[in-house]
Amino acid sequence: MAYSMEAFDVLVIGCGFCGSVIARRQAEKGKKMLVLERRSHIAGNMFDEYDDNNILVHRYGPHTFHTNIAAVYTFITQYGEWDDYVLKCATDLDGVLSPVPFNFETIDLLYEKTDATELKHRLRKRYSGRETVTIVELLECEDVLIKKYAEKLFELDYRPYTAKQWGVEPKDILPEVLRRVPVRLSYVNAYFDDEYQCVPKHGYTRFFENLLDHNNIQVELNTNALDFLKADVDSGQISFNGKHLDIPVVYTGALDELLEYRYGRLPYRSLRFDYQTKNIDSFQGSAVTAYPKAKGYTRITEYKKLPLQDVAGVTTVAYEYPLRSDGEAGDEPYYPILTEENTSVYEKYKRDAERIQNLFVCGRLADYQYYNMDAAVKRAFEVENKII
Image (cartoon, rainbow, N blue to C red; front, side, top):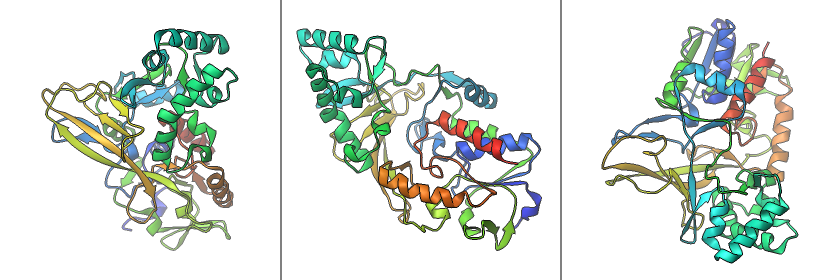
């Protein structure tokens, strides 16, 4: 490479949320940062841009920021304007469009009035004082009526959607995945309950440009760090271009790839997007609508509504197709497949990585965790605080 590593205090691999947040916080402390990104753009999977319809689209799937962590919200709002935005989603239950998370409106749509009234009464009584309950709890409920409702939701939505999205049966997925989308015990129609819910006024890419705009940060795109970076577990050392590297290295990519698949490849899910232009003002009622039983695709996002954009007579939609990432066909690894077997293999990689003292792993791929954006920022705070 054309520059010398001696000019930098910290090397960061990847400039999604974790890499960019750590780079900025270290730069503010006077550290010279080199950020290497293998893609042609910054912002990781939050990258967005205007399409031919002049509609801002998210190239790697829909993203809205939500958090209850005040420190995270305070941090992100330093780097651009953010607009309040409450995401509303729907799902197709055999032709019936229901809000997601499921709520009491779902019951009204699926049951006759008398049965719906009785079911809502039992739910309020059984889970008194609670706003939501997980599908796992409902499936285990001793009340037969509640359990049958849970089984109906499971068969109409959770089972087919989970099998299609993750490529495995729900029984093989860790329960935390099924718990991500709860069932509401009210008529509240909002995907999240967090205190802070927003989207960047000028898009995520602009936010990341602001975040990385510091004299102590140098970003190199189209650069695969693993062409130069080698991690030697046995010696506990990292080399760059064949030379020993003793500065901190923050790695946000797939840990199995860094450690040369010594325990085999960790499985991930990837996504393929089919973007379509519709010459109408509105395509669907919600920004995001799931189709658990549709062939191939899991959901459709209408980007004109994420955020609301004043573009008349045309709209852009994206059909989302999940697929397995084999790491060889150019598929982007999006989500770790969280089964007991996979997490057990990951723990082996993690233990090996911990033998390299100047290596700091952080992020959805490196931690093999399904992070929301706020959790990624919080994780970046934690890792950055460990860098000496």
